[in-house]
Image (cartoon, rainbow, N blue to C red; front, side, top):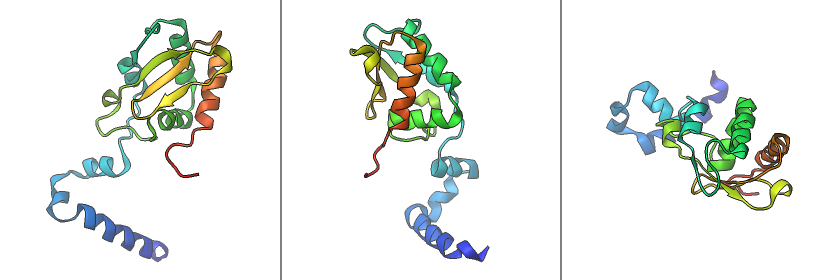
Length: 152
């Protein structure tokens, strides 16, 4: 398709400036693809399994149980938006979810406050909500209004 030839040529030239030469021969095609577009194995249960809890939270705390119930009910797109909210990127590391360590800790404020993420630490400040529906509403509101590192 000639309509994208100039775009492809520019990409090809830039890619080979950065990753050209014998470096490309070190990788299998699937490894190179993972490096360029990221790992696409979104193993959400692995993320849950690797999550650490601080303060008053533990895996069976009611707020944490609600959080994971709500999270697993989200669409794939919303889950990717959560990754962006949490880490600053909607992509998972090349080594998969097992290399992504989420930390959830309680924060004050209750039902009037949104969850807050600290992207440098994959840390989620999650208020102790009074019910699952409030948690769902506040989490989705926080995810939907996430800006990431883009300039506004």
